[in-house]
Length: 127
Image 1 (cartoon, one colour):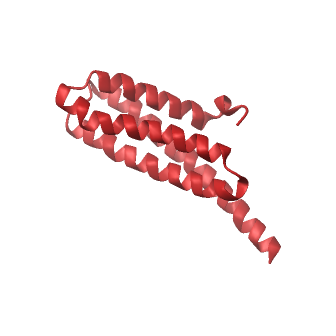
Image 2 (cartoon, rainbow, N blue to C red):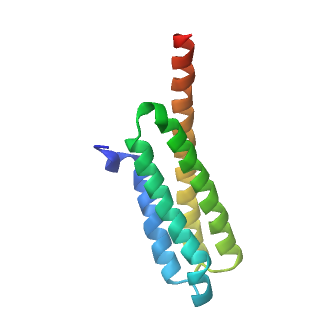
């Protein structure tokens, strides 16, 4: 995992976690403990899954990245719900959080396609 801090997906995942922490702090009380709690947990889960995927052996990394992508999809839904509930302090706060989630999703998708290409390539060589 050396050099993980230089990876854009690592940087964006940590920024997402920080942005969500700051946003939830300003949520109305009811949303802070309902949807805000979910957002915090999901953002932390994305960071954990990323560390696991980076630490995984080559053969298990694809599954880890797929789990990461599912977690990103989950947080996008929760971010949208928070917007609909008007929990965010302003639109720019929502925009920053959602743009980071989309960026992480795109990076995870590219990583997944790259790993899937390796898997397909290595299987065809073995046969």
